[in-house]
Every structure is written in C-alpha cells, then in structure tokens.
Amino acid sequence: MPAFLVLPAWVGAFLLFRRVFADWREAVLAACVTWGVVVVALSEGLSLFHTLAFWPLLVAWSLISCAALVVCIRLWPKMPVLPLPPFRRGLLMPALLIGGMAVILLTTLVVALISPPNNWDSMTYHMARVANWVDHRSVHDYPTHILRQLYLGPWAEFAVTNLQILAGGDRFANLIQYVAMLGNVLGVSLLAKKLGASRQGQLFAAVFCATIPMGVLQASSTQTDQVSALWFLCFLNFLVVLLTATSGNPWGKAVLVGASLGLAALTKMTALVFASPFLLWVAFVLLPKHRLRAVFLLAITCAVGLAINAGHLLRNESAFGSPLGPPSESAIYTNEIHSPAALASNVIRNLAVHLAVPAMDMDIRSEVFRLHGLTGFDINDRRTTFLDTTFYYHFALSEDYAGNPLHLIVAVISLAAALSSFRTNRLAAAYSVCLAGAFLLFCGYLKWEPWVSRLHLPLFVAAAPVCGLVFSRDGVRRVGYVVAVLLLVVGIFYATENEVRPLIGEQSILKQSRTSLYFTVQPERFEPFSAAAAAVARGNPSRIGLITGVDDWEYPLRVLVRGQQGVTVSFEHVDVRNESRNCPPELPPAIPPDKIVVMGAFQPESVPPGYRAAFESPLIRVFEK
Image (cartoon, rainbow, N blue to C red; front, top):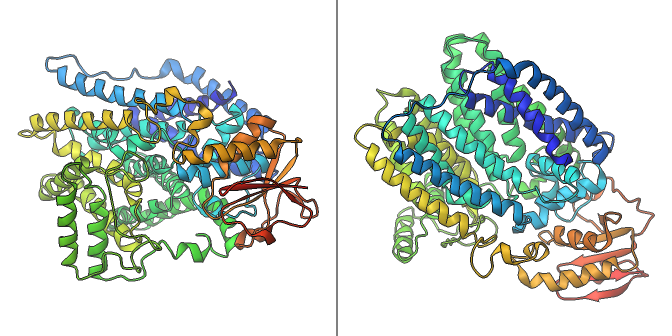
C-alpha cells in the first residue's frame, strides 16, 4: 500500500542517528523530528505548485524511500545491537508493568484502526481542512466560514493529509496521534534516565505516560495534543542534551532543539508557552559559560524553528494581517487581566478540571469553590473565562473533557520531592521549576475553558520523567510499583471505555458501521446528513458550494457524498464574509456551484437566485439549480 512508503524515511533517519547517539531511544526521537520536517517540506513544497496529490506524493516518498534503502544497506551491518537488560531475579513486576502497557497500547491501536475520526473538532476543522487541502491540491488558505481551518497549527493535519492522499481515505488518520503516544512513552523513559532515574524509574515514567487518561483517549483520535506533546518532549530531551553535553558538536544538537520546538509550535502554539521557561533556563546556563557561542546556538535554535513555521505564519499574515491569525479570534483566548487574584483563579480552575472523581465529586467541588472564594475573584469572570462559558467540570470518558486525577496527585508529589532535593540533583530540580513555571505561565496567559484539560497533556507527559525519578528512589520503590499498578488499571479502563469510540458494550465500535461511527458524538445528525448527502449526490454534480456556521460539521458530509458519488465532486465555501473572503477560491467566482449546502442558521439571502430547495431539515439544507 502506498501509505507505507512514509516508513522507510524514518528507518533511514534512525540508522543515521544511531551512529551519533549512544542511546537508541535518542535516535528514535531524532528520526521522528527528521520525519516531521520532511512532512513539512513535502506539504509546503508541493503546495507551491498545487501538486499536493497522489502521483507527486508517491514519487516524492518513493525517492525518499530509495535513499533510505541505500542508507539501510550501507549502515545496517555496522549497527550496534540494541542493548537488552541483563536477566536477573525480580523481573516479575517489571514484566507485569510492561505487559499492562502492551494491553493499553494494543487496545488503543485496535480502536484507532477500526474507528474513523469522530470527535467534534475533527468534524469541524481538523479533518475538514485536510479534505479542503486534498481538493485544492495545496495547503494554501482558501475562503471558509470556519476560520480555525486556516490559522491554527497545521502540522498534525499535514501528516494526515499525506496519509489520506496515499491511502485514498481516512483509514490511517488516527495513527498520527497513536504513533505520537508511542514516541512519548519511549521518550519519557529516556528523559527520566537523563534526570538520574534508574531502570525502574524509567519504566515507571513510561507507565505514567502510557496511562494518562487524556492521552489514552486522544491516541485513537485526530485531536493534536499527543502530537504536540511528542514534539515538546523531543524539545526537552535535546535541550537537556545541549545543557549537559561536555563534548561533541553542539550545533547539531541546537538544530534538533530548534526543529523540535518548530514542529511543536506548528502543531499547537501553546507549545511556545510551555517552552518559554525552558528556553530561559538554557540561556541562563549557556550564556555565562560560552557567551558568543551560546548566542549563536540560541540563534540557530530560533532560526530553525522559525523556518519550519514560515509558510504557515506568512499565510496567516497575508490573510489576517497577523502571523498568529485573526486578532479578533486570538483575543478571545488570552486573559484580559493579569493580577495575582486572576492568576490564582486560573490555577485553581485549571487544576480542578482534573479532580472529577466519582462518589467524591460533590465534596471535591464544594472545596474547590470554597478555595476559589479566598481569591476574591468571580469564578466566571469574563476577563479570564472563554467567551460565555461558565466554570464547570465533570467526570468524562471523552478526549474533550477527561481529567487525570491520579496522575495529577502523583505529578504534584513528584515535583515537590524533586524541588526539595535541589542539592543532590540540581538538573531535576531546575527541570521541575521550569515545568511548574510553564503551568503558571499557561494559567496567566490563557483564559480558562471547559475543555482545558486536553491542553495540559504536554505538561503531564513532561512530568512523567520526574515521577519516574522520584518513585524509583530507595525507600519508595515498593510504593512506586503499587502506584504503577493503579495507573495501569486506570489506563486499561480508559482504553476500553472511551465514550466516543467504545470497544466494549452495546455501542461498541465492533458492532457499528464505519459510516455511523462518524456521528457517535451527535447521532441525531446521521439521518439528516445521510439524506442531504443523497440529495447532493443526485445528478452527479461536480461542484458543491458550502455555507456553514463557525462550528458546523463539514467533514462527514464530504465523506457521505463521496461514498455515494466518488471522488470527482469538489466542495468550496461560498458567500464567505469573514477575513478569509479575500483568499483565492478554488472555483472561479463566475462559475456558480451546481448545488449549495447550508448548515446552521439559515439566511435566505445567502442562497443566490435560481436555486430551489432539494432537501430541508433543521440541521442541513440542500439547494439545486
């Protein structure tokens, strides 16, 4: 299958880096970063000529695979054997923990392969932007009613687009997040080693990462926080290498730090918020020691990261007058007041979303409100709260709202313990200070929102190495094993009970058609969307106009129509009145669409004269000539 052509590039990069780094896990992360940069280069490069399509991609990945094959042939015989831990007594518990992680990872893989993308954001913009790029053969901006399709970080969708084009569908779309989870589980064990953790500590860090409820739920979806966490983790790993290396070439390490940070920012801009304290840390350490060379190292880091984001930032600047996107939308995410009370309010609320525990929920909630009352700040203050939402959280089994209560407790205890041992392990203590600073900076900069727990995933992944370090110390190792077993129980529960993609029960993904699974979050949309798709496909139109609200489900309509008509039909947003209206449309304005689909609030003046209703429902309408 052509989609598998993306793998040799990673293998070739791994073999090259295996000769550079002593630890094979470091080579894995470096190969991931290299592969990520290749995806950016191909997506952006082919888009310049509107050739982001099957044959150009097939040729490009084939050439890369051939180069990787040459690398494999030349380097494979010289590769050192991967080290295996020596056999000794007492391996029962490590084997049990590894087996538990395997159950979680295999279960999540099954879910990711069987279920199509079906969370809300995927329907409105994650997968919808992929479908538009495939139609346009380019990642360039286009007129759209859903601006998030344009200005939010696109790297994860770049990768999905490559797979979607080569595979001819979205069968492998969820695997980008899943593979990112695998990288995170491996990467935290490596970073735990760098912070001073034993083998047991590295294993505990991996267990912690593999069982984060939000991470487990997201790993079978096309959300982007696992991917963001992977690039942030790569950034942290190579940053520590740059800080602690006493020999070798620092320039290559600076490039990897910059590339990791660039990929993280291209996936989700919150990565820059998380990375800021760590960048200050490296500047504080390197500048006094190396002075001018340190300035050049930091400049290289920034330049590489900026180069990776250049295409996306320039498109935002062209469309919205700002590299960060439309100022009107950017403003709704950031705090309008910065005071100790506002910061305390956001810290309490950001922590509280992870404390929804069945049977104890009301008691915990009352304590949260009591504690927040001490700030003297309105818990729903509009200056620190997203739009018209109100503070509320609940126990959830979806990747939009799930909290990580046990992991939060373990992480807080571990960070406190690492900070208290500053004299014996300054590296871990400084790392913990930066991680705590990243959380405070996040709370001080961004408004609270009901689904904020998913944005915390990179922080939980970054906390795993510290947890591994602390719970592998003499005196608490047995406690660490008990905690690890509890974490595995939690992880297996979330892997099987995902409410959006359940593996067991009456609503199991094994008992439903792939088409119906697109509508798991909103099953009431299935029938009207199916009927609308039939009306759209009738007569084999070639051009379909879309009029939607800012949060409507564009992607499943495309899937349903193409399921009936094939891939010859193209979609284009029409009657666009926001900032993207000046982006060049794929269809010339003089050529009216054959049919127009209207979602959300219906405004009769949006439909040009000469069109009549072919299908009507409260959710979706179809008009034809």
